[in-house]
Image (cartoon, rainbow, N blue to C red; front, side, top):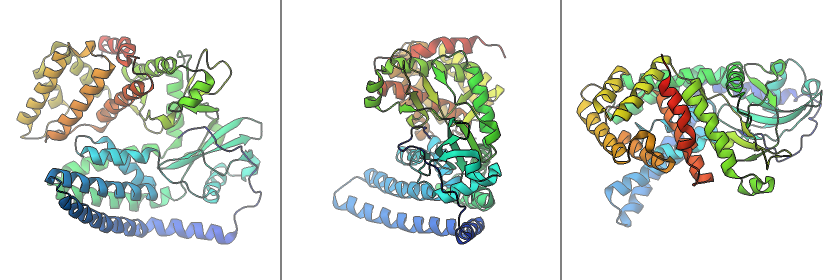
Length: 469
């Protein structure tokens, strides 16, 4: 979520919400904790999705579409409706959609594309509901902590929304506030999600154990993201790790105004990476930003092992400040989806890269076996897929000789292989690792195709290969 406000901050209303409003908020929270409203919404979504799918199929038949084309259209319509419902439910449901979008080894492209929209298309909550959370968490009226607090949010995501404010001491800040009902409704929400995942696994003919593993990974990640104190620690550690990168800024955290459900950080006026007019106004060349972006992410991914895993344009900005044309600085925000790679996974990644460099598919498959990535009975199909991937890399001259555009092409081919190869069971952190790299390369190709992101990242990749466990 970004820090670029569309409206100037204004002093909030001094009066607390009326008793009737507070009572309505408590009733909503209590009802949601039962899980009934969520079940009703999801059931309605299923009914309408089935209806949409039937209508879509009939239209496709009339237009003479192939069976595969009809199936793709039906799936797209159903997933788009599901994504809209998950986004409106927010919390674990929107987060589930984002989690599912990562699982390119399980879901078809139409599904992952529609669900990926949940990163930045979640409707905000009314300000009075957010105000109550801030006052309760900081144990004081809003006016006692802030001289101004903008009711209109800068952005809204799955578990929180961000508001611009000004401290009593004059500093401009951005305040990330968790939705008020999340903690109370979480047990019911997770129970519904677990049942839903098992049902989907049964329909898809997949073992219940796979659904349970996916649920455990999802629930553990969700609990981590709900802890804003953890996010603050990761932001501080990543800021320390990147302290040598003069072009990279991580917002300062105001710890005295931050809790597990409220995170207050320094506000910076910014221009989005995708705002070409804004960058032109600042006189910033995209290639200058891409150098900083490649260096920052390569350092996190290959050297530090702790990385900001959500590099979409809503979380990356250029700071709007004097001198930006000569020395533009890149602002990172939202560290809730940061990941620290397990040492065993880092070691296997390094061994996998060595296997790629040696073009040794047998050693690569052995690493997959060690990580439990190949389901029982699936090895022949996985082996054929890996052999094809190695042939593609060898045809390009080797892993380290690929340029950025070839890496993106290879990524698309690897994604297709994953989706067409049954029996692969990939760790979510590995998918996040790969997805983060893919986002960075894709962002580079979009901003300036002439910049080779692979070459910029190569020194860090070589350092990663040279590390000793």
